[in-house]
Length: 336
Image 1: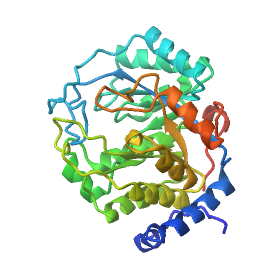
Image 2: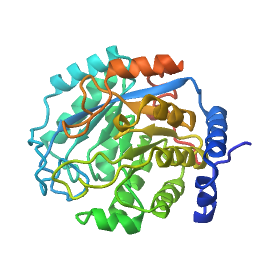
Image 3: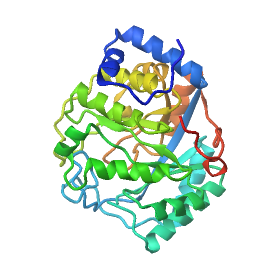
Image 4: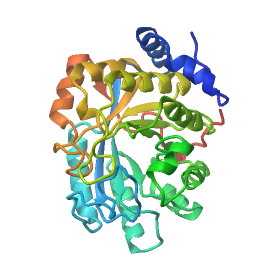
C-alpha cells in the first residue's frame, strides 16, 4: 500500500477511510507513516505566549478573547531577552521548534512586529526552528518574517467552512484561507489544522481535512487539537471527545496527507500514555511540551518536558533534531 499525494479527495473518499474498522485504519495509517517518516522519531515543540490576552476576536473556545471572563490576565508583548531565555531552556530539554503565539487579530507594521522579527532572528540563531502564530498577515509582512529566518507559520482553519461561522463571527473562513495563500507565496512552511470537540459533526471534521488537502503542496504540518474547555467561554460545557475519535482523526489525516507532520497538540493532556501511543502509531509525529504544566496560558494544561521524556523513552522514540528537512529559505517548496 503506497500512499499517493492527492488534492482531489472527495468527502465519500474521506468517509470511507475514516469509517474503516479502527484496528484496520490504524494499521493502514501506520504503514503510510512508515513509508514517509522515521517511525522512531518525534518532533517536540515549545509554545511561548509572547503576547497574552485582550484579543478582540470572539473565538468561542479561546481563553484569550476579550469577549469572555476566563481569568487570563492581559500581558504586554514579551521582551526579546525573556523569550530567548525560555527558548534556551527548551533547547536544553531537546525541543527542536519554538512557536511564538501572539493574541492578535492581525499583524500590524509597528514596533511590536519589529520586536517579533527580532525574536525570530534570535531563536533561529540559537539553532532552533521558529514557528509564529500572529493572526492574519499580508504579503510584505510574510516576506519580512521569511527574511528573519521564520521556519513555519501557523494559521488553523479550525473546522469546516459551514461550522466555522457558528464559533467565530469576527473573521471569515475566507480570511483564514487568504492568510494560508499568503504564506504559500513565501518559502515559509505552513502549519494549519483544526480543533475537534467544538460541537462539530464528523462531516465537519472531514470537510476540514478536505480543505487542507486541497492546498498545494499540502501543509507541512497539520495540528489536530482536542478542545481544552475553558471556564467562561461558550464551549466550557462541551462533552469530552472519545479517544477513539481522536485516533480516527490522526489516522485519517496521516492517510490523506502522507508527507505532512501530524501534530497532536492542545488537549493531549486529556489522553493517558496508552492513548497517546495509539495516536503515535496512527501517524502523529509531533507534540508540544512545556517546562511548566501549561501549554499557552494557565487555562490550557500541557505535559511537562520530564513527563514527555519518560513517555518517549518508554516507547523507544527519540526527539527530532532541528532543521532535519533543511531550512525553507534555502529551497523553493516543491509543487505536488
